[in-house]
Image (cartoon, rainbow, N blue to C red; front, side, top):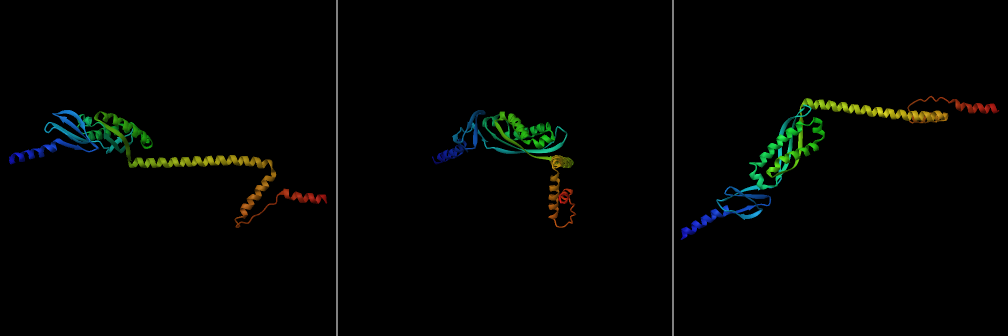
Length: 250
């Protein structure tokens, strides 16, 4: 009797772990019965038939995957190395198990291929200046490829663009030339505006002869504030006329 009880206990100890399954909130258990798909179960506790049912756990959390650096020749024949990061998660556990052998590896490979293809159709300036547009394009294309596998790609971000040293020097020289061009344009625009204002001032002063004298006196006041110069003050002829008129009246 005792050996039979012991045998039953041993069998129960073996069957219970095989029968009772627990999956956490972020997991699902995909059940196969005699090789045929039954469906996904969970989260929580459920029972399966030992030796007949088989369960495959699938993680539903977001996976952050680094795409290794890819050597890309852009549309304008510039060689660059680009890496990226892809955020995705499983939304259909059954498809992720039945339709693809390893959905993470498959997503990684399609991400690398798409990265090379899309960036190879873009020019270097577009890659550097319109990165957000390229990110959205990559996300859309990769998501279309992974959708049959039950994988949803939410975000793709280009992380770093590495240029050859020769290209970096060329771009630095181009940037310096662009800064000099802008500086010359700003200086020329300032000279143009100043000349227009001076022409307007000259027209106003020309209409009022006394204005030039007032401007002359103002300039002298500015010079005198320095207190380090000897000023030779020419007496305007208009000032002498007052004394001449006074003598003539006498």
